[in-house]
Amino acid sequence: MLKTIFNIIRCFPEQVFLFLFNSGIFAWLWKSGSDIANQLGVTATWGTHVPAPIQAFFGENVETVQGFFQHSSIMWLIGSMIMLWIVRFVKGMIKFVIFAVLILLGIYLILQNQSILNSFM
Image (cartoon, rainbow, N blue to C red):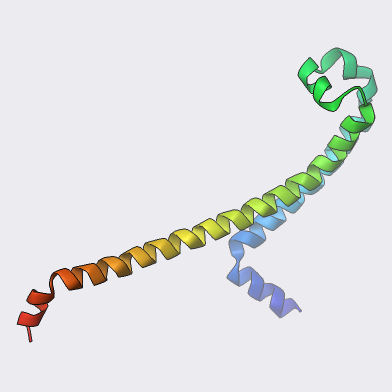
């Protein structure tokens, strides 16, 4: 089990570090968001300090705002993992395209200079 974990760390160091970082951010957002919503009492400051567009977005329901604070950390973790997969996929596609362009360029140059290559034989 430990050997498998170390192999994963060796093969995917960027992803492992980003997962650990995102897990820390997830825990911090969840804790601080819940504390802010509970300690400040969103109900007391809702009408006076929150701008009208945000009030319109959440409606008149304060429980929705508290739910947002509690679930925003989960969305951060899920969103960052999805972004990680997208970045990894795009990076792989860029490497593949560059590799294919180099191969095709080599074949093109060989075909264009076939007469020069035949003179060496």
